[in-house]
Image 1 (cartoon, rainbow, N blue to C red):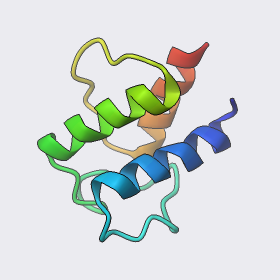
Image 2: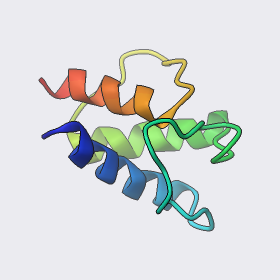
Image 3: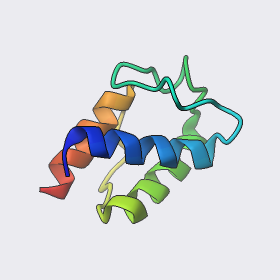
Image 4: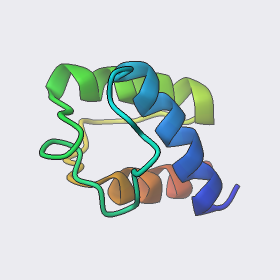
Length: 79
């Protein structure tokens, strides 16, 4: 799975957590907090959904700032 595929899958996950937010313009540089309004509870939900979607596990709380950081983590966890 390449990073573009991971990004598209993550946009689906983000869309389920924030259904009123338009995810069509989300890029690797999109800020989780300031642009998408992801708070700590939302990030927990994103993490749980991403674990299921990508068959990975977040071992500890990760301090992600951008969508790209999450994509990079997932890419590393899949390998």
